[in-house]
Amino acid sequence: MFVLAACGSSSAPAETELTVFAAASLTGTFTELGKRFEAANPGTKVTFNFGSSATLAQQITQGAPAGVFAAASPATMKTVADAGLAGTPTVFVKNKLEIAVPPDNPAKVENLKDLTDPEVKVALCAEQVPCGAAAVKALDAAGLKVTPVTLEQDVKATLTKVELGEVDAALVYRTDVIASAGKVTGIPFPEADQAVNDYPIATLKDASPLARRFVDLVLSKQGEDVLTKAGFEAP
Image: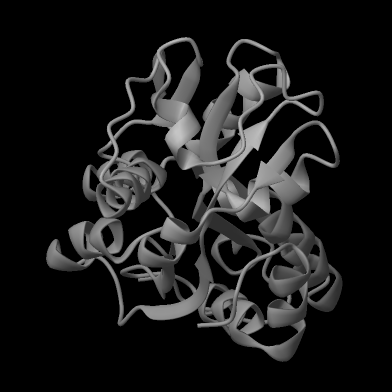
């Protein structure tokens, strides 16, 4: 367990360094919160590992060192908690899907049913990651089957396929559409309300006190403002 060193010690990296594992869809907001945390805690350094929540959970259970885990689904957090490696998780935001298309929307996609057209090239997240599980749930709710031309390992990679013009459409989080700053256009669809993802956050086993303070920032009014401005919804 990390222990605070006496004042004046020069050999206490544990209390000045924090590693946060977070879902890829949190990249922009957590980077901003990390900067604010460092400013409020002079001398601290926050390092982020962003990626698929499923991959991050696997890395943690295999021994990767981290102080905080923020996942895009309760299922991926449960993997870490069941291994006895996480404290009690708290849901801090919710997120929902949109259809992302290029700004000129060459395939003329207007709704979820349009994605079933074999002429429309679609990218989806792999089913084992939260954005993919949400896509399956939304399509099931609509009674539709979509055959993607690619399955990506996280939502950022899925969005990139649209940004590069490699696909006509993708199902990604609303927050990623907003973060693209006009590189894609988002199309809301009603079935997204039946596939909303809860995002839990927790400190990890043997984490330093910095981990708890970072979680407190995420759960604070300041954290909520950063997250909701980016398109996340309050829990």
